[in-house]
Image 1 (tube, protein in one colour):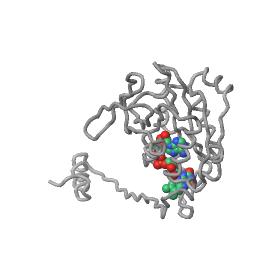
Image 2 (cartoon, helix red, strand yellow):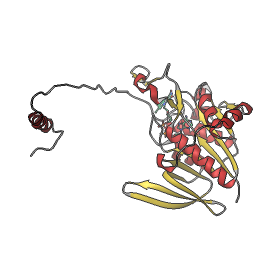
Image 3 (cartoon, rainbow, N blue to C red):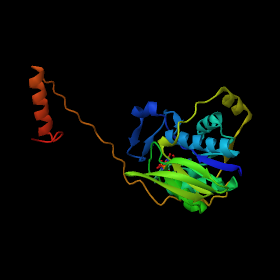
Length: 270
Ligand SMILES: Cc1cc2nc3c(=O)[nH]c(=O)nc-3n(C[C@H](O)[C@H](O)[C@H](O)COP(=O)(O)OP(=O)(O)OC[C@H]3O[C@@H](n4cnc5c(N)ncnc54)[C@H](O)[C@@H]3O)c2cc1C
């Protein structure tokens, strides 16, 4: 079997354990991230796991790539500890303010600089932005087919993959020629745990840092100037809860509770 080189796109997202500290800044129309540690997105772990499994079956190389500010090295180191052969950080002030299109452009140029890939893996959607747009957009920039919502992947012959993807009431199996972009769902696999060997491996590997000039990106197509969408407003949903304590005999309280829930249209009437 031919060795398969995979690139896995991983996004730095706010660590889920600190989500209660994340808020929206009305003025800058961005998330307030100061003081919130970053983490590797959960679906990106599944994407990395799938690339590692393919490498175990066919040989080849796994490269993790991320676009983000300095500090993003942390999640790339995590990717190396889990088994990636190399990791690349696209970092440059010129990338700041990117929407999904400008993010995808930068990632695509990073992947081109790597010499392309047989399979480019994504999480189906990120934990925070969750648009699910970046994978398909990278596929467009690289002129590759893409399959999203993938929850099963098998190698077929010398140059294809069979992908099972999720639709509303079932699944569809497709066969697709490599090179291809694959965006995975959580159910595709169980990501492995880090090993001692992985942490030793990390010491021998350096994170490659590339700027916009290093990847030959057109400055008009990256960051804020390259972003066709603009955030016009951010709205925080105010949660208002009213509380009422019902007391009395359990059967009376249950009856009253049902009546109140029906009155608020939480339960159907009748
Ligand atoms: C007008 C505008 C301005 C913005 N400005 C900023 C800003 O200043 N700072 C900021 O932090 N964000 C900014 N954002 C958000 C930023 O565009 C998104 O975080 C980014 O494009 C990814 O979108 P998403 O989270 O919806 O990804 P999705 O499409 O949901 O992600 C799917 C998958 O794509 C991959 N992926 C996504 N992003 C990356 C990445 N950066 N590196 C590697 N892989 C990735 C991962 O595999 C991920 O699982 C802005 C968005 C808009 C619309």
